[in-house]
Length: 158
Image 1 (cartoon, one colour):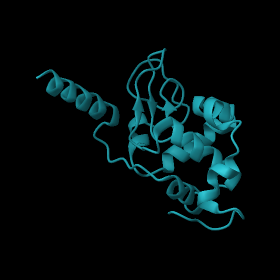
Image 2 (image 1 turned 135 degrees about the vertical axis):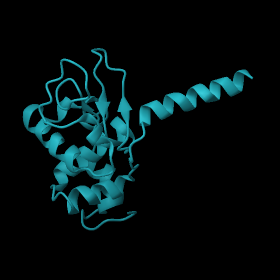
Image 3 (image 1 turned 60 degrees about the vertical axis):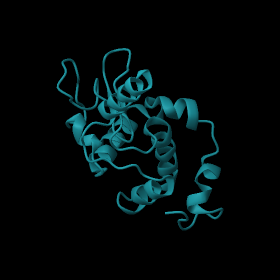
Image 4 (image 1 turned 90 degrees about the vertical axis):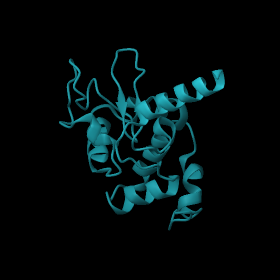
């Protein structure tokens, strides 16, 4: 009985975190390909954003982190914060990207990329905790080698 209750609690928490949106969980090289081909981002940006996405959301576009110390939440594949960048219906948010936070939870990355570019221009990569803790001092060329190969050309493992 206790195990069944625990399982139901875990399922409820995971459902609340992911929500009901139509999100997608990317693979590393798949995300890199989308960022390069669809959004025409340069590889020096892509490798940082792919690393950020891995450690912020595990490449999950429907990820929500409701546990920030200030009561704000982080949304989407890049975990964009509701206190500053998007509106989630709570008071006090600045919504500098001019979007609803829930729009960051779909498999369409257009709003995520647009807002992330604004964040990058305003604060740099250090706006993301994952960049500071997991990506900043990592050799991102080695990290992306499985996608771009040693020469940096082409994609493997799409």
